[in-house]
Amino acid sequence: MAIDRKRIISEMSKICAVGNEEGLIPAFNVFVTQLPASFWNGFAERLTRRVSSDMLPAAEYLLFNAARSCGYHTGFGIITSDEWKAVVGPMVEKVPDDVLHGAYAVFTAWGWAKSEVIEIVPNEKMVVRAYDYYESDVVEYGQSAKLSAYMIRGVSAAFMALAYGGDYQPKGGPEEAWECDQTKGIECGDEYGEFVVRHA
Image (spheres, rainbow, N blue to C red):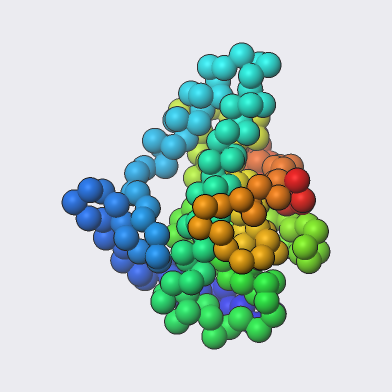
């Protein structure tokens, strides 16, 4: 594999993304917000803990789907950015596998999750492991009884859509062809989080 994870993490973590007066960070061809992880964790935990048990799957799917949609557009912005082209682009030899490996190195560099692809079956399946991720930190709520990494699940499905879903669609859609199941979680006492992406 031509992807040098350590170099990508080192180079991408040096990039300073500064917010504007509206609180948005215009970087990597996308606008993102800079809010504390505790805000997002608190939102997801309050939502999923307050719905009835019969509504929990729907609430969790909404969180996953929001992350999947965001991941599709943000992911496209990242892999078409000048920063990506300068750092990761020269390492890409095998498309789309190297792009996926590079994307998770960037994901790690920006502190979303120390994550890596451990298996790819082209256009069928991808397995991702995360050894640290912001959604695992539910200290305020104690150890979770449920797997709660909706963002990594959604983004992983989105990355597969970008890799195997054909041309990018500005209005979205291709990401819906992929689902991701979380099979392990630090928030539930496992050593790492594990995520399996397959066709919907």
